[in-house]
Image (cartoon, rainbow, N blue to C red; front, side, top):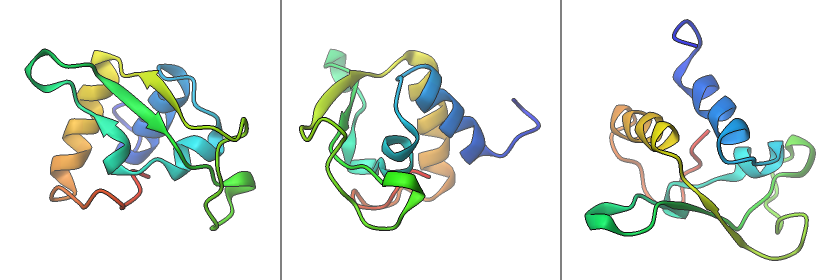
Length: 95
């Protein structure tokens, strides 16, 4: 994966490690990530969806927000991406 772009790596890990659907991965915002600082829980809050790659946010397929565990590998890649993008605001999309 090192040859791929950083966003491609994030997308693949969001789908593999977190089990997100494509629309959920594309709609994930930086504010939806709980990093697990000071021993707290590491998780992603799935609150948004971009159906069929559209531009209008909707709720997830189930109609409800949910929590998904954040693996150490995914957290590391997200942290690197967050720092590389100069720590964007909470409503900015990860991808």
